[in-house]
Length: 248
Length: 233
Image 1: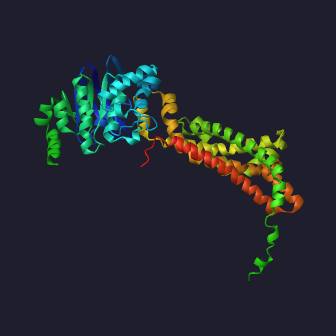
Image 2: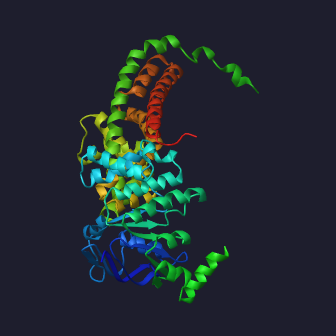
Image 3: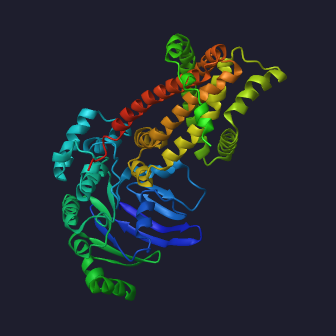
């Protein structure tokens, strides 16, 4: 099992965002996380990357496990799990003071202490894959949103994560730029990259997902193949949510 | 009604000859002014960085003293603080061996508080996404500070930091009241001897201004360097 989450809980002050989350992901699996806003999808993803600290439950990634039920964990333990995941944000968050190439080699250079020569070669290959090699010396501010997001995907991939986490990767993009980003994510799926994707793009989820999780009010309400969940949902809440999307 | 206007003695407005003759003396004073200003700015920056970081800490033992320090230094006039150092401390048996040192200590300690606030606000104005992106790439706190946050905060902090630097250059004139022979003190000596106060103080003002103009150019240069990654549209 690549990821196994059990009984995960998260509160913000009085507000319970994740009630009790249980799910697992196998190696190479592509999981799409859907649900209305405020349902806890993004928080769940951020918990997997420890950008949010869960209040209870366990997270196991790769062969490593953290339990949040006991005494508070030290920062060092918390961030141990980060090395298995790469995160792609809705707002890209490229480093504005660095060029595309500098952006993507920064972390492996500083954290893993790899040589620059090796990273620049590896980086060029990755940038070619996401169609950004021509822009490698540009600063993020001069790129379109779609280009920035593709660079951000390459940046996360440079750390060679076991699992890629995508937090609504196309929600901040102009409609005509969505496709170029989704195409990159689909090509990763074909290569067997394990991924969890929070998305509102239902057609994309249908094409790419091995498994779809529907979340609402801090619970995973329904889980199954894309066909099951998106086309033949059992739960009334899933049906209502999909109906709402169709109406738009 | 306009009598006062006709009583103005224009011939005393500015005496270029006297100004020219006193240039060597004023330059001696300017040298002292710049020594005080540069040392003060350096110490104020280093101290300000430490206090600013302490102010941002979640740990009360760092945070509260930093808050108190900033509050006191921003809330008291620099002149009063210099008096405390130079005239107050000797009363309890602590003496500076030179008024220049007292001036540097006073100005550094006072302006460190302003620098601390500038540094704190600049660091906090770097968007949260930058911190999170760096964290998600496994950078630890010192790494993400040094490589991601501080370079971006520096750009934001440049204009207010140069305001402080100019304030320090001008603030050195307060050291003249504790007998530091800096620019204003030198001008006052000549003014006292010749009664040409207008000429001498205008000359001093013009010299302060020139120094600040040069500093302003340096600021422009740095801003351009730090802004080069922004898309000019």
